[in-house]
Image 1: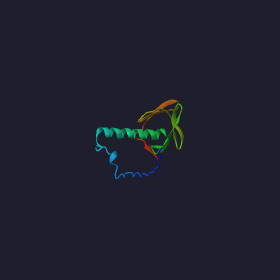
Image 2 (image 1 turned 90 degrees about the horizontal axis):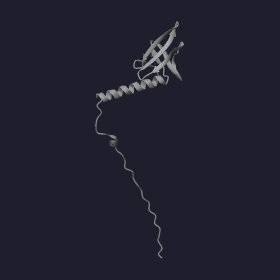
Image 3 (image 1 turned 45 degrees about the horizontal axis):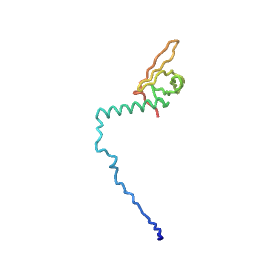
Image 4 (image 1 turned 120 degrees about the horizontal axis):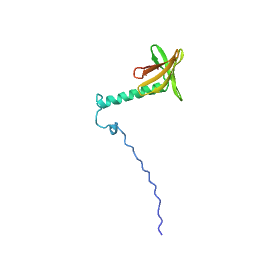
Length: 120
């Protein structure tokens, strides 16, 4: 029987230093005027505006500030100065349909989310 000696060795691994981020470059520049990029920018804008409205950010219409508050059966639009304004029956990608009653008659209101000015 032969006796074996144990030998331990230390190995140092040096990490390569990345000089630039060439790995993530596809090599093709983005044509920002292409129809696809314009469509993607529009979709991103519509999504952003819709998220702002649904989350309850304040928006301005004719020098008055309003907010949307959601509930189980739709929601309502509330004015900062006068309170309740109207019920919301539909929230789409770019339009919001609302209604309220004035002197016993139903008045329909349609908001275009693309033209709303959101207050920060």
